[in-house]
Image (cartoon, rainbow, N blue to C red; front, side, top):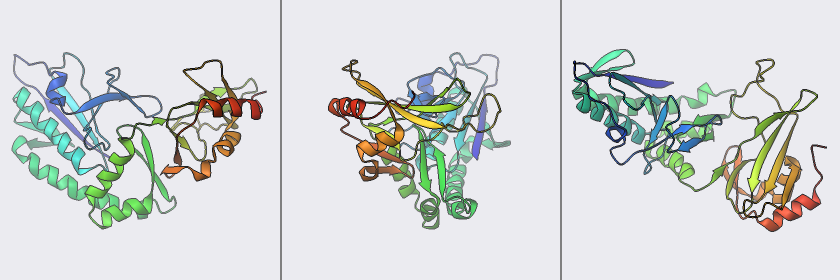
Length: 297
Protein backbone atom coordinates (compact mmCIF):
# COMPACT_ATOMS: atom_id res chain seq x y z
CA UNK A 1 0.00 0.00 0.00
CA UNK A 2 1.18 3.48 -0.79
CA UNK A 3 0.07 7.00 -1.60
CA UNK A 4 1.13 8.13 -5.08
CA UNK A 5 1.50 11.82 -5.84
CA UNK A 6 2.47 13.55 -9.07
CA UNK A 7 3.35 17.21 -9.49
CA UNK A 8 3.67 18.79 -12.93
CA UNK A 9 5.20 22.08 -13.97
CA UNK A 10 3.37 23.95 -16.72
CA UNK A 11 4.37 26.99 -18.72
CA UNK A 12 6.93 27.62 -21.43
CA UNK A 13 9.81 28.64 -19.17
CA UNK A 14 10.33 25.89 -16.61
CA UNK A 15 12.49 25.96 -13.50
CA UNK A 16 14.79 23.05 -12.71
CA UNK A 17 14.04 21.37 -9.39
CA UNK A 18 17.23 21.16 -7.31
CA UNK A 19 17.89 18.66 -4.55
CA UNK A 20 17.86 21.51 -2.03
CA UNK A 21 14.30 22.31 -3.05
CA UNK A 22 13.34 18.90 -1.64
CA UNK A 23 15.63 18.56 1.36
CA UNK A 24 15.38 22.18 2.57
CA UNK A 25 18.56 21.44 4.51
CA UNK A 26 16.70 19.18 6.95
CA UNK A 27 15.96 15.90 5.15
CA UNK A 28 18.52 13.26 4.22
CA UNK A 29 18.46 10.85 1.31
CA UNK A 30 19.90 7.75 -0.28
CA UNK A 31 19.10 4.78 -2.51
CA UNK A 32 18.08 1.29 -1.45
CA UNK A 33 20.55 -1.46 -2.27
CA UNK A 34 19.49 -4.92 -3.42
CA UNK A 35 19.04 -5.95 0.21
CA UNK A 36 16.68 -3.05 1.06
CA UNK A 37 19.34 -1.18 3.03
CA UNK A 38 19.83 2.53 2.49
CA UNK A 39 23.01 3.59 0.71
CA UNK A 40 23.23 6.93 2.49
CA UNK A 41 23.88 9.95 0.29
CA UNK A 42 23.66 8.00 -2.97
CA UNK A 43 21.71 9.34 -5.96
CA UNK A 44 22.46 6.32 -8.14
CA UNK A 45 18.94 5.01 -8.56
CA UNK A 46 15.58 5.67 -10.17
CA UNK A 47 13.91 6.35 -6.82
CA UNK A 48 15.57 8.41 -4.10
CA UNK A 49 14.50 7.78 -0.51
CA UNK A 50 14.18 10.91 1.64
CA UNK A 51 13.80 10.77 5.41
CA UNK A 52 13.73 13.02 8.45
CA UNK A 53 16.78 12.22 10.64
CA UNK A 54 14.92 13.51 13.70
CA UNK A 55 12.07 11.04 13.13
CA UNK A 56 13.30 8.12 11.01
CA UNK A 57 10.31 6.17 9.76
CA UNK A 58 9.65 4.73 6.32
CA UNK A 59 10.61 7.84 4.37
CA UNK A 60 9.26 8.81 0.95
CA UNK A 61 10.42 7.71 -2.51
CA UNK A 62 10.86 10.49 -5.06
CA UNK A 63 11.77 10.21 -8.74
CA UNK A 64 14.19 13.13 -8.60
CA UNK A 65 17.08 13.40 -11.07
CA UNK A 66 19.37 16.27 -12.09
CA UNK A 67 17.71 18.65 -14.53
CA UNK A 68 14.15 17.56 -13.75
CA UNK A 69 11.63 20.19 -14.90
CA UNK A 70 8.43 18.62 -16.18
CA UNK A 71 7.00 16.34 -13.52
CA UNK A 72 7.96 14.45 -10.40
CA UNK A 73 6.34 11.58 -8.51
CA UNK A 74 6.33 10.95 -4.78
CA UNK A 75 5.38 7.69 -3.09
CA UNK A 76 4.54 7.46 0.61
CA UNK A 77 4.37 3.81 1.80
CA UNK A 78 1.62 2.74 4.21
CA UNK A 79 1.38 2.29 7.09
CA UNK A 80 3.80 5.07 7.91
CA UNK A 81 4.39 7.57 10.68
CA UNK A 82 2.68 10.92 11.22
CA UNK A 83 6.11 12.52 10.81
CA UNK A 84 6.52 10.93 7.39
CA UNK A 85 3.10 12.25 6.38
CA UNK A 86 4.15 15.74 7.47
CA UNK A 87 7.46 15.42 5.62
CA UNK A 88 5.73 14.18 2.46
CA UNK A 89 3.29 17.06 2.28
CA UNK A 90 5.95 19.57 3.33
CA UNK A 91 7.91 18.45 0.26
CA UNK A 92 4.78 18.56 -1.91
CA UNK A 93 4.01 22.09 -0.76
CA UNK A 94 7.59 23.24 -1.42
CA UNK A 95 7.73 21.72 -4.91
CA UNK A 96 4.38 23.24 -5.81
CA UNK A 97 5.63 26.63 -4.66
CA UNK A 98 8.88 26.27 -6.62
CA UNK A 99 7.02 25.23 -9.78
CA UNK A 100 4.11 27.60 -9.12
CA UNK A 101 1.68 24.69 -9.28
CA UNK A 102 -1.71 25.29 -7.70
CA UNK A 103 -2.60 21.59 -7.56
CA UNK A 104 -1.18 18.08 -7.74
CA UNK A 105 -2.48 14.60 -8.51
CA UNK A 106 -3.06 12.43 -5.44
CA UNK A 107 -3.92 8.78 -6.21
CA UNK A 108 -5.52 9.89 -9.46
CA UNK A 109 -7.42 12.79 -7.91
CA UNK A 110 -6.58 16.45 -8.51
CA UNK A 111 -6.00 18.18 -5.17
CA UNK A 112 -5.53 21.90 -4.60
CA UNK A 113 -2.48 23.01 -2.64
CA UNK A 114 -4.71 24.71 -0.07
CA UNK A 115 -6.19 21.28 0.74
CA UNK A 116 -2.89 19.79 1.88
CA UNK A 117 -3.56 20.09 5.62
CA UNK A 118 -6.89 18.33 5.25
CA UNK A 119 -5.37 15.45 3.30
CA UNK A 120 -2.49 15.10 5.76
CA UNK A 121 -5.00 14.80 8.61
CA UNK A 122 -7.00 12.17 6.70
CA UNK A 123 -3.90 10.07 6.15
CA UNK A 124 -2.97 10.12 9.83
CA UNK A 125 -6.45 8.86 10.71
CA UNK A 126 -6.16 6.20 8.02
CA UNK A 127 -2.81 5.00 9.39
CA UNK A 128 -4.50 4.23 12.70
CA UNK A 129 -7.08 2.12 10.85
CA UNK A 130 -4.37 0.27 8.89
CA UNK A 131 -2.42 -0.56 12.05
CA UNK A 132 -5.59 -1.68 13.80
CA UNK A 133 -6.31 -4.09 10.95
CA UNK A 134 -2.91 -5.78 11.22
CA UNK A 135 -4.01 -8.54 13.58
CA UNK A 136 -6.82 -9.63 11.26
CA UNK A 137 -4.79 -9.23 8.04
CA UNK A 138 -1.88 -11.23 9.48
CA UNK A 139 -4.11 -13.84 11.13
CA UNK A 140 -2.07 -16.72 9.66
CA UNK A 141 1.28 -15.03 10.31
CA UNK A 142 2.22 -13.54 13.66
CA UNK A 143 4.77 -11.10 12.25
CA UNK A 144 5.04 -8.41 9.58
CA UNK A 145 8.09 -7.11 7.71
CA UNK A 146 8.08 -3.34 7.19
CA UNK A 147 10.51 -1.83 4.69
CA UNK A 148 11.75 1.26 6.49
CA UNK A 149 13.98 4.18 5.49
CA UNK A 150 17.22 2.52 6.63
CA UNK A 151 16.48 -1.23 6.43
CA UNK A 152 13.66 -3.79 6.89
CA UNK A 153 12.19 -4.33 10.34
CA UNK A 154 10.13 -7.31 11.49
CA UNK A 155 7.47 -6.77 14.15
CA UNK A 156 4.86 -8.79 15.95
CA UNK A 157 1.52 -8.13 14.23
CA UNK A 158 -0.29 -7.89 17.56
CA UNK A 159 2.06 -5.12 18.70
CA UNK A 160 1.31 -3.17 15.51
CA UNK A 161 -2.39 -3.74 16.09
CA UNK A 162 -2.06 -2.28 19.60
CA UNK A 163 -0.67 0.98 18.19
CA UNK A 164 -3.74 1.24 16.00
CA UNK A 165 -6.21 0.23 18.69
CA UNK A 166 -4.78 2.85 21.06
CA UNK A 167 -4.42 5.52 18.35
CA UNK A 168 -0.77 5.68 19.35
CA UNK A 169 0.91 7.15 16.26
CA UNK A 170 3.64 8.63 18.44
CA UNK A 171 4.48 5.22 19.86
CA UNK A 172 4.65 3.69 16.39
CA UNK A 173 6.91 6.51 15.19
CA UNK A 174 9.16 6.18 18.24
CA UNK A 175 9.50 2.44 17.61
CA UNK A 176 10.68 2.86 14.01
CA UNK A 177 13.01 5.73 14.92
CA UNK A 178 14.56 3.99 17.94
CA UNK A 179 15.59 1.03 15.79
CA UNK A 180 17.01 3.01 12.88
CA UNK A 181 18.80 5.79 14.74
CA UNK A 182 21.33 3.36 16.25
CA UNK A 183 24.80 3.16 14.70
CA UNK A 184 24.65 -0.50 13.71
CA UNK A 185 25.61 -2.56 10.67
CA UNK A 186 22.66 -4.50 9.23
CA UNK A 187 24.10 -7.86 8.21
CA UNK A 188 22.60 -9.72 5.25
CA UNK A 189 23.48 -12.96 3.53
CA UNK A 190 25.07 -12.97 0.10
CA UNK A 191 24.04 -16.03 -1.86
CA UNK A 192 26.46 -18.24 -3.77
CA UNK A 193 25.86 -21.27 -5.97
CA UNK A 194 27.76 -24.50 -5.46
CA UNK A 195 28.96 -26.74 -8.29
CA UNK A 196 26.14 -29.19 -7.56
CA UNK A 197 23.58 -26.43 -8.16
CA UNK A 198 22.72 -25.87 -4.49
CA UNK A 199 23.00 -22.48 -2.79
CA UNK A 200 24.53 -21.24 0.42
CA UNK A 201 24.24 -17.88 2.13
CA UNK A 202 27.24 -16.10 3.64
CA UNK A 203 27.21 -13.36 6.27
CA UNK A 204 30.28 -11.14 6.65
CA UNK A 205 30.84 -10.18 10.30
CA UNK A 206 33.80 -8.03 11.25
CA UNK A 207 35.53 -7.54 14.55
CA UNK A 208 34.73 -4.40 16.53
CA UNK A 209 31.63 -3.62 14.43
CA UNK A 210 28.33 -3.61 16.30
CA UNK A 211 25.96 -5.53 14.04
CA UNK A 212 22.34 -6.51 13.63
CA UNK A 213 22.33 -10.25 12.96
CA UNK A 214 19.50 -12.77 12.46
CA UNK A 215 18.49 -15.23 15.14
CA UNK A 216 17.71 -17.59 12.29
CA UNK A 217 19.69 -17.00 9.06
CA UNK A 218 17.63 -16.36 5.96
CA UNK A 219 17.75 -15.68 2.24
CA UNK A 220 17.70 -11.96 1.31
CA UNK A 221 14.20 -10.53 1.16
CA UNK A 222 12.33 -11.25 -2.11
CA UNK A 223 15.30 -13.01 -3.72
CA UNK A 224 14.34 -15.50 -6.45
CA UNK A 225 16.13 -18.55 -7.81
CA UNK A 226 17.50 -17.41 -11.20
CA UNK A 227 16.99 -20.91 -12.60
CA UNK A 228 13.43 -21.70 -11.48
CA UNK A 229 12.06 -18.24 -10.73
CA UNK A 230 10.78 -19.56 -7.41
CA UNK A 231 11.70 -18.23 -3.97
CA UNK A 232 15.38 -19.01 -3.48
CA UNK A 233 16.35 -21.53 -0.80
CA UNK A 234 19.78 -22.02 0.74
CA UNK A 235 20.99 -25.43 1.92
CA UNK A 236 23.39 -23.91 4.43
CA UNK A 237 24.53 -20.59 5.89
CA UNK A 238 28.05 -19.63 6.85
CA UNK A 239 29.71 -16.66 8.50
CA UNK A 240 32.84 -15.09 7.08
CA UNK A 241 34.59 -13.62 10.14
CA UNK A 242 37.53 -11.28 9.98
CA UNK A 243 38.92 -7.86 10.81
CA UNK A 244 39.44 -4.84 8.57
CA UNK A 245 42.31 -3.80 10.85
CA UNK A 246 44.02 -7.18 10.76
CA UNK A 247 43.55 -9.02 7.42
CA UNK A 248 45.72 -11.92 8.60
CA UNK A 249 43.01 -13.32 10.86
CA UNK A 250 39.63 -14.82 10.05
CA UNK A 251 37.92 -17.68 8.32
CA UNK A 252 34.57 -19.31 7.57
CA UNK A 253 32.40 -21.09 10.11
CA UNK A 254 28.85 -22.41 9.98
CA UNK A 255 26.10 -20.10 11.20
CA UNK A 256 25.18 -22.69 13.82
CA UNK A 257 28.72 -22.64 15.26
CA UNK A 258 28.81 -18.85 15.12
CA UNK A 259 25.46 -18.56 16.93
CA UNK A 260 26.66 -20.99 19.59
CA UNK A 261 29.98 -19.20 20.03
CA UNK A 262 28.48 -15.75 20.58
CA UNK A 263 25.62 -17.06 22.76
CA UNK A 264 23.00 -15.69 20.41
CA UNK A 265 20.09 -16.51 22.75
CA UNK A 266 21.52 -14.16 25.37
CA UNK A 267 22.02 -11.16 23.08
CA UNK A 268 19.87 -8.02 23.06
CA UNK A 269 16.78 -8.47 20.89
CA UNK A 270 16.46 -6.01 18.02
CA UNK A 271 13.27 -7.10 16.25
CA UNK A 272 11.33 -10.34 15.74
CA UNK A 273 14.21 -12.07 13.92
CA UNK A 274 17.32 -10.12 14.88
CA UNK A 275 19.61 -9.45 17.82
CA UNK A 276 22.45 -6.98 18.32
CA UNK A 277 26.00 -8.33 18.37
CA UNK A 278 28.36 -6.05 20.29
CA UNK A 279 31.97 -6.44 21.37
CA UNK A 280 32.90 -9.06 18.78
CA UNK A 281 36.66 -8.79 19.22
CA UNK A 282 39.68 -9.82 17.18
CA UNK A 283 40.43 -12.34 19.91
CA UNK A 284 37.05 -13.95 19.31
CA UNK A 285 37.70 -14.01 15.55
CA UNK A 286 40.98 -15.86 16.13
CA UNK A 287 39.37 -18.25 18.61
CA UNK A 288 36.39 -19.06 16.38
CA UNK A 289 38.58 -19.54 13.29
CA UNK A 290 40.77 -22.07 15.09
CA UNK A 291 38.00 -23.80 17.06
CA UNK A 292 35.32 -24.41 14.45
CA UNK A 293 35.65 -26.46 11.23
CA UNK A 294 35.52 -24.99 7.72
CA UNK A 295 31.88 -25.56 6.61
CA UNK A 296 32.42 -25.42 2.85
CA UNK A 297 34.84 -28.28 2.46
